[in-house]
Image 1 (cartoon, rainbow, N blue to C red):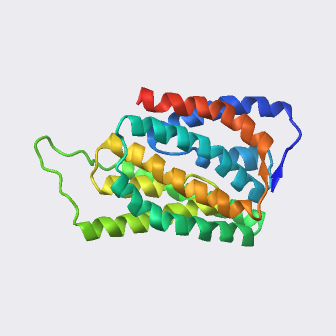
Image 2: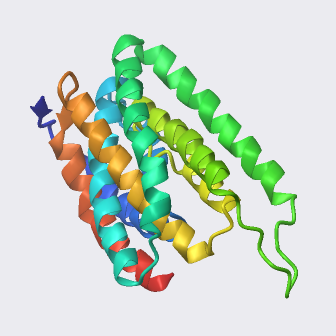
Image 3: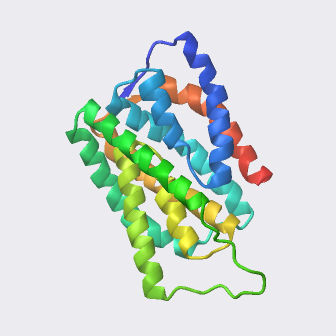
Length: 234
């Protein structure tokens, strides 16, 4: 279902927030949903289920514009992307079903736990030195291992996207980095995977959820511009 909420004064800061999220989202391979959801649920007090699908809808323009920008710069590995997409789509539908079956409080609590886990992962990852020495050859993973990684991390990303309305970037990036592909290729490929997962998650939620097009309009007014600039700055 589609609804239009009454415009409030606080809505006018959303294009600015959207621009920042769109700019940096396309520079790190994410759609920005991880930030849209707290803005909607905590700052604007939007009901959790509505916040999830509205966040997904607001993420789509960032992913579309960002993916096109990276495609023009040959920053997408389509073969690797497909590995993540197949199970990611399945995960997105499962996640959407989970969201529709749990309460607002349970959804917010689960997202809080997920956010803490992501933060801890960032802290521990920052202490590791993953930089390869010059002249050292990159080890290529066997095809079966690549398939497993793509399927596993793709499913995780799809579940997160469908459940929380975020882009599910963290597991996608983790999987892509583990495959030792170039950094810019990781960013572009991640955006394409996030785009596909988000598209199917929106479709799954649309049947039973409510999209607030007023909020989507204000958020995407700035995020689309940021998404255009992101790949160029990168």
